[in-house]
Image (cartoon, rainbow, N blue to C red; front, side, top):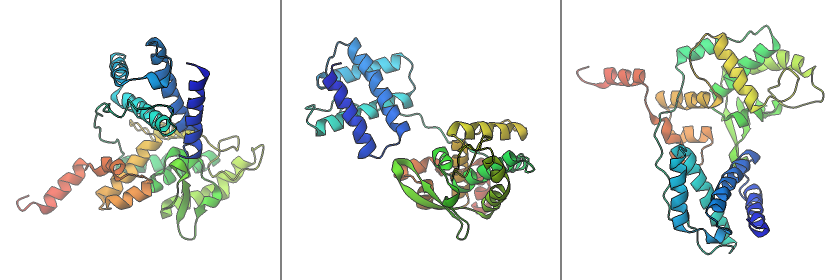
Amino acid sequence: MNNNQQAHIQSFSEYLQIEKNCSPHTISGYLQDIEHFKSFMKQQTIDVLAAVSYVDVRIYLTELHERGYARKTAARKISTLRSLYRFLLRENIVQINPFTMSSLPKQEKRLPQFLYEQELSQLFEAPDLTTPLGQRDKALLEVLYACGIRVSECVALDVEDIDFAIGTIFVTGKGRKERYVPIGSFAIDAIKEYINGGRSDLLSSAKEPTKALFLNFRGARVTARGVRTILDKIVKDASLHVHISPHVMRHTFATHLLNEGADLRSVQELLGHSNLSSTQIYTHVTGDRLKTIYMNHHPRA
């Protein structure tokens, strides 16, 4: 691929950053998908982006299938390339977008994994509150469940983002979209205990001052990978045989709200979803809840 084509891709990257406010992680994902397609173009002896046709797209989809890519991964790659060509069309670099005529691979529908309240209780009791890291772990767990925020939003929290007076946290989400999320009393109490105790101890190990709420043992802002490691340790300490991740906590937050009667629009706002369709995956009903509804409402239950 010649230098002009690479310059077009660089322009697309800048467009994602400046106009779309995409995160570095999102942009990196886009560029990886484009690099994969560039390899396909080289294999097919296609020199320029403008030469890609609908037939080439069909061949690419077939290759993704034959190589065993999951439907979700294939759909993401096609979506990325569709966005690239939409940008190139806008800039008059290409005359057609060959990806608009291709349908995305049908996604497998899976119910989101979540935790039951009994499992959560065991998790909340696991951290050792006599240690700074234990206090941090308890506060972290409470915040993830109380607010349903993404792991990227969680690690970006600063102490000043917590408003203890009115019980909210200030969250910067995808595309730098900002929102306020209510936070419950259990989480507030855990955060206060951590800030007044464990965080101060962890901060003493820091090489430089930080406003970060959640710190690692070196006194620096905890990373997304660090949060996953913390959750794995909590599960192990609680002797639970469940898979847990920050996203499972987010699923649990949404599922419990809807099962207790919260409306979909409110949950959408709390999760920071742009589209209601993203929230609708949580409208599944647990078996226990389904049985309760049946027993309470069926005339001959």
